[in-house]
Length: 122
Image: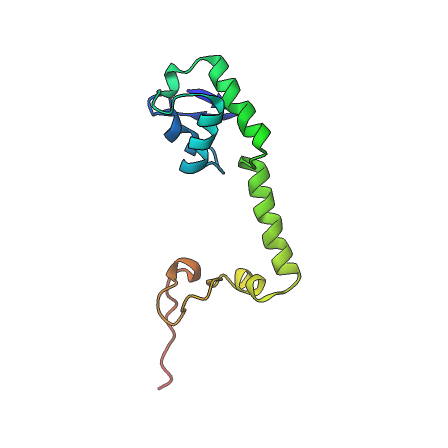
């Protein structure tokens, strides 16, 4: 398996799909990266030379794309900021409820977890 920034990407897939294995790089950004690096997106990752892999890594670094650990840290610090200033979104994150205005009377089981049965008042 090829390694870019310490992340192993699969050899048998096309390079444009393999780059998506890196956290922070999606389909659109992988196409832009390959275009700037001058690498054909239809090549399999295993067919790439060492120079081409280095060129791809240089393009990612020169564009200043936040990937892997840096991106995770940024997202985590943004959530901590929201919870520390006690804004509405931060409160919803703290309570584990949907943040973006979804209904909670039904649905939202992903955020709320399994149902908790409440006994009747008879």
